[in-house]
Image (cartoon, rainbow, N blue to C red; front, side, top):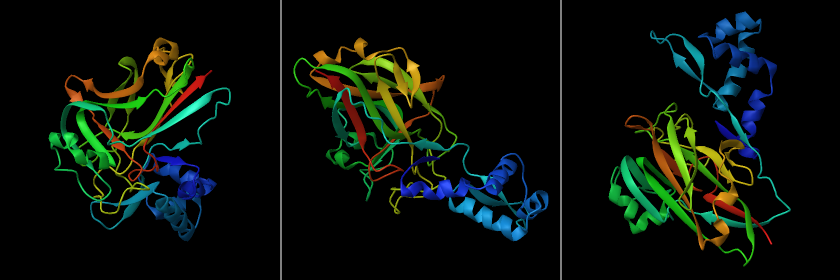
Length: 302
């Protein structure tokens, strides 16, 4: 689960603000127990257990399943981790040039393999699994796009003042793997290039449909991808990192960006093993958990 510090995530923080509920989560994460068994084990009334389970369910942290005989239900975990994204850090010693890139405004797309597709917040763009949809003039309306294999590239102009020096560049985007319909435990490897320089890769752990995305439209089928993880890709003075975790030793000075008339970000689905590919899904401002397109920030000094 991916949350931030907006009011939209408050119910999750409230659900976790309880020793009783934390103990419940610890128990059900490793065992199959009913509410009655939880009450007996924790020496708490069944009414109190039911109330706390309801709070956890409302926060989409747990759900209920029934035994094969359908007579008893038991709580199960919906998630295995919660990622909290705080507001972006400020670097006052640098100037900043910010760009907002709609996900349909890609510069190039190559070698796309289904399952694949694009959709606006109101309708599909062309048909499911139609590779030609990625070359449609309607692609600019895209609010979600996905493919199992392929490469996608975005471009921004280098609009910095003459003789300035790029000190750091970062991209922020909501992304997930791709699986027909959805699979919360479907891993994918994504490689990144800036101006055709390979800078590293990351792994996406799933293609999520356990709960509806905060901004995913109601008309979008529940069994399809609902949201992704907000990933922060940064190339700085010392290395390249994603979410503050180093993924390579590539430094900003290795890229010679100040001499370029444009900056490009290319992403490619890499094989997990042999010919198995985990795919890529990108979310725009009207899909997923974050009200944003792809953000690009270029930090520079005079």
